[in-house]
Structures are given as C-alpha cells and as structure tokens.
Length: 254
Image 1: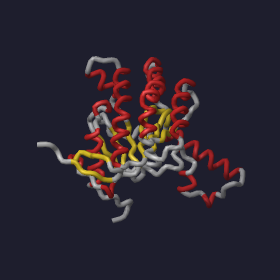
Image 2: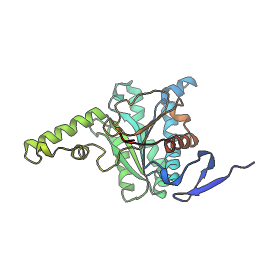
Image 3: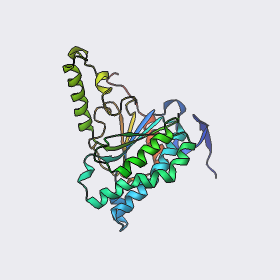
Image 4: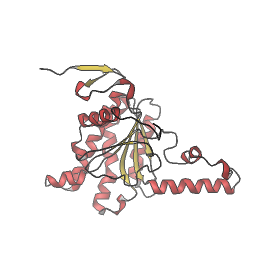
C-alpha cells in the first residue's frame, strides 16, 4: 500500500512517517557531521572516500531541511583541531569546496539557499577560500535557507577572541564594564546575526560537543545517532526533528 503524503510550511511534499507538525519546526539546526573515516574503513576504503560520500550527503540533508521549513542549517565541516590530521587528508578536505560548489551551486541558487561561512580564513588555502567566497557571493541575495558552514572553526577560539574584542572596547572607552551583557558578548561571536541552534544533531555515536558552539548551545536540544554521516538519510533527519517536536523546552522554568 502506498504511503500517504501531507503538505505544510513551504508547500513541499514530506513523508508522513516523519509525523512532523507545521508549528514546531526548529528554526536553526546544527549538525556535527561525524564518522566519514570510520564509514569508509568499514568498507575497506580510504578515509578520503568517506569524506567524498559525506560531501554528497550535504545536499540531500540541506534540501530536506529546506523542504520542511528550517531557516538555518549549520554544518560543522572542519574544526580548528582538524589541522592535526594527516596532511594528505587535510589536503583532500581543503579540496572539497572546489568540488562541491561547482556541482551544486546552481541547484542551491534555484532553491534560494544562501551560503555563509563561520570560522577563520587564516591558514585556509587560497583555492579553498576562493570556492567558498564565490558561493557566498553568488548566493548573497537569496532569501531562503541559510546554509552555514562552520569551517576552520573552534568555539574556544571564538569565545576567546570575543572576550579580547570586549576588553579592547573597554580600554578604548567604547564600552563600560557595567554594560557588558550576554547580548554584547554574542554580538562579537562568529555567529553574530544568527539565532542560537534549536537542535544539534551529531552522527557516529560520539556523545560530546567537540568544541562546537559552546556558548550558543546553552539551551539547544541534543540528538545523537550511531549512524555515520554518509549513511544519515533524509528520513533519519526527519526522525531527529520528530524527537525535537516531542520535547518540552523549559529554559530553566517549569
């Protein structure tokens, strides 16, 4: 028997197995895309094959998020700690934007997706930055889902630099110590202008945050899965959203 479908939000067709409700879609979903190397090793493949498969999964999950009305999708693509990996693996990871964006940019533009990067440009090869910045430029006028790549990003560095910026402003007389607020601090983070994530998904079975958005995740709902990122499908994404919708967010209240 064929499965029923229903329509909501952006008037897209969604599998009824997801049991999603229109009025409780997370505005901002963040994903730690983990397990590419282990996925490849289990198949007797080199680690870079896992990263290639993981890259192809980005578009599928982006489209799934857009279809149900998610406004911002942040993907942890490369951390400040990932530079410690073998040089050949780092080099391959740095080549992925050059492969991904030329293949997918036209469809992303058609779907009104806007590309954003959170992280530091310092140390990133020129060819990598060129691919990312070109995608950002070509999509800067789009008004749909924000696809935010956390690339060369680490939360402790982000928080340290934000504190330094505040100290400098105090020293220059631009800010009084008594005027330091959570909002002032948040405005100096890499994610300034974005709401905090409502839901964090981490694949691969690891139960940790790994220096990712430590400030921003204060009240984020966390969802973990043993699946490796290349095998994390649209239906798994909907499963995470359904679990989110079944939770009550109290923010410290009753």
